[in-house]
Length: 169
Image: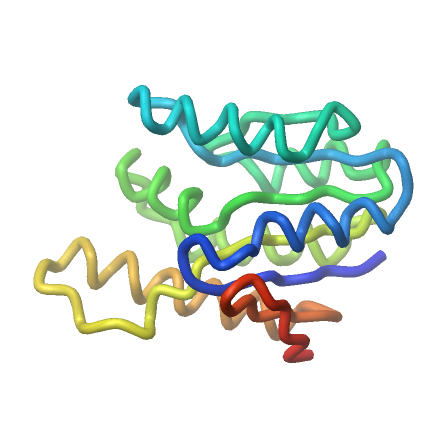
C-alpha cells in the first residue's frame, strides 16, 4: 500500500503524529512495539504510550523480528505502526547480531511490499556530536543508514520539530 517514515528528535511528537496518520487509514490498526521493559521507568513509559493510543490498536511486542512480523500479519490490517526503529537497532546491537544491515534491508523491503500502510517511527541521532565510543558511533551510523534507506523507499517522510510535522517527501 504505502510506506511512511516519521522522524525527529527525542520527545518531538513523532509517535503522536504516527498514531494520527494510522487512524486515518481505517479501523484495523496494529502497533508494533520494539521497546523492552527492563526497568520501572521504561515500564511506565510503555504504559503511558499504550494509554495514549487507546485500545483500537492490536499491539505486538516484538524487539527484533519486525520484518517477519510485517510479512506475516500485514494482510490483517489497514495500517501497521512500528515504534521505533532506533530502539529496534539497539535491541539487535545488544543481542550481538552480526547481520544488522541485512535485517534493515529486510525490514524496509517488507514494509514497502506490505498490503497495509506501514508507518515507521525513528529518531534522528546524527545531528549531535560524534560519540566518543565505538558502540555509540556504530549505532549512530546504522541509524543514519537505516533512516536513509527507509526514506528512499517511503512514499511520505515527515520530520517532527517541536511537535509540528514537516512533510519532507
